[in-house]
Image 1 (cartoon, one colour):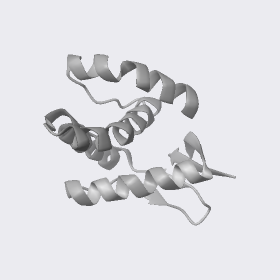
Image 2 (cartoon, one colour):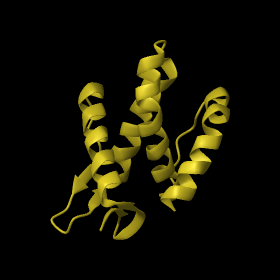
Image 3 (tube, one colour):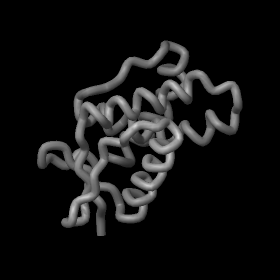
Image 4 (cartoon, helix red, strand yellow):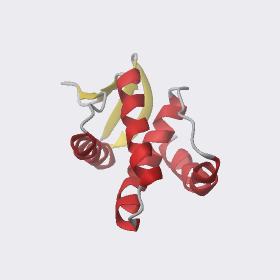
Length: 118
């Protein structure tokens, strides 16, 4: 069983059921913390629609928290959610710009996530 993430009827990520639900739950929690909407809407069909401009703004806010976090726990808690979100934006052909030091630091993990999410 899967939990697809869709943009305009196209599946960007055909997540496993548990992975997909956990991602959505973590995104909702982060959105509450950031005081931003996620742009992710569960459907009655058991998938999740992505509203791209809103989702992109959410990921930008998440990246802002990650990039400014001086606390390693906050940075670590944000990291994997951010990486998953960055991969989704790449699949949607709407990536955000990362600072060079973050681009380099996240490159290997993004590659691993991309292979797993593809």
